Image 1: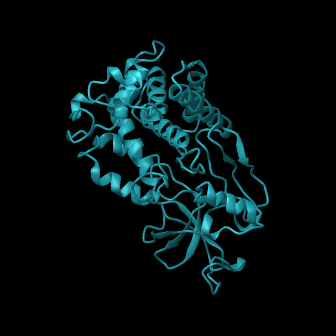
Image 2 (image 1 turned 135 degrees about the horizontal axis):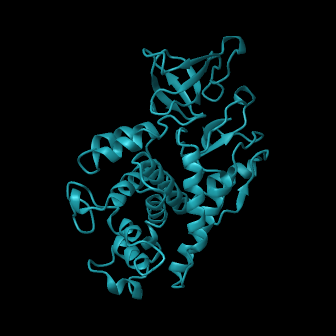
Image 3 (image 1 turned 135 degrees about the vertical axis):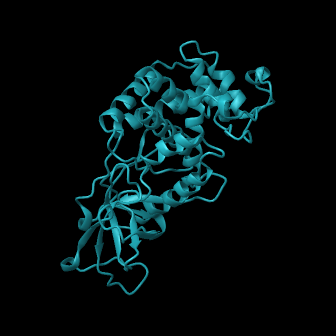
Length: 355
């Protein structure tokens, strides 16, 4: 399979990974033959990247730290919770708590796998995908820090619900009467979660403090390093990173390697240095399936990752024979070869390509 931009997608290609709605339902299934109407629909709902089948790379499998079934369950649960909160209804965290246990168990079983944030985001599902990504990334950091299962569950639940305050849009909502600093969504989310007796108060503080910075420049209380709960320091990093790579965030979208570099520049300033280091150990700077150009001038596709070496993946390269932008990734099978950038120390990735 290959990870390609929607602009380079053509009717007749086969979808390699399913696309889901905000409630976990399948919008388009893996294996479907894409029609012009389907491609137009993907444009309308805001999809920017998809995975397609490609016989030249049929052996490429994106290793998942969390199974597709568990991801769909988590998206469905958080969708239901946020809908209840938005409508002023009570919500049950029993089901989502069980799913968090599954997420932790699956990540622990796959802790040597590099994380590829490859869910297909749409205008409809992006908040739920964002919540799940932040949850998974935060849990991985917690594991790297040696957290117990109990602490991991507190972290995972708080991370999944960190943006719960965003869905309450009516400033006259009674949930905001308890806000000490106006209607900032961090306060609103905290006041929702702190009243859930089955949730740890530490989980609720993630919602309150995930926009705080260790240098005191954050919101809503301008807290500094030791004043910020460690769970919130973790979610501050993962929330910031996922917003950097999201096509629906207010700021221009960055590619994963650009977001990594940006985040590194803020380590020890806005974000806790050790937490940034633990995060960067586990995130793929060049996601599997991405098309790249090497410093040799050759074009290829990332086919594998090295845990702990996020900038040095395995890349399969091929001869560039196409004469146009659209077919420039055609290649001669007799000249296919692979670079293990962990060993080829003088070769590096120059850029990520869109198709």
